[in-house]
Image (cartoon, rainbow, N blue to C red; front, side, top):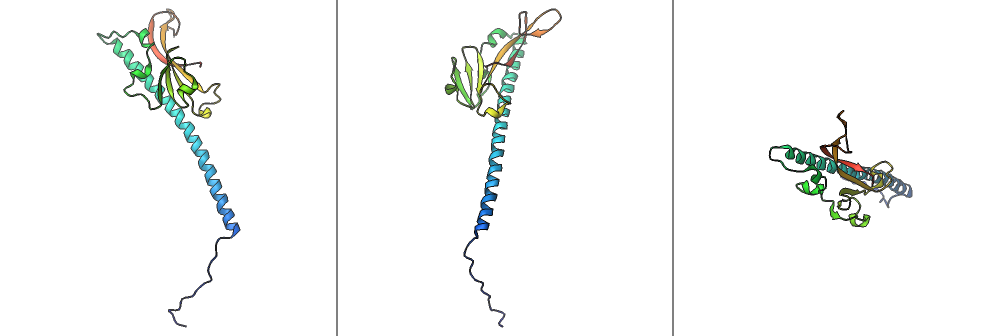
Length: 173
């Protein structure tokens, strides 16, 4: 036999039905796992985005309040509670839909923020209902609240008395 002889094997004609079924099952399982993880990360990303925006509004509110306390500061905290908090930010979030008077869900759009001029609140319409555990509504509302000194014991609340601070709190939608 010549060492240069090449052995030729019969041509393979394709995959068997069993091999094809195994490939389809593996691809299906991988796609299901991928879709489940994508849904989880979308919900997680919406939650983090919401919390970050509220934290940014709170930080900016605290800065404005402290600026009012500086010598020559004349910002009235009661007036600050009436303003649109998004105007305080250097740049508005990409999902800020604007200011409306009693906006409908269609005006806001899922996953967007807006300022409701009727009750001076910030509204977020959830994109995914799973973002927070069993929400009663897809709409979340936040409002700038004045913190008052309630009595001589130093208890702080949202009742009557001198204004001692300001915060953004979630309210019922």
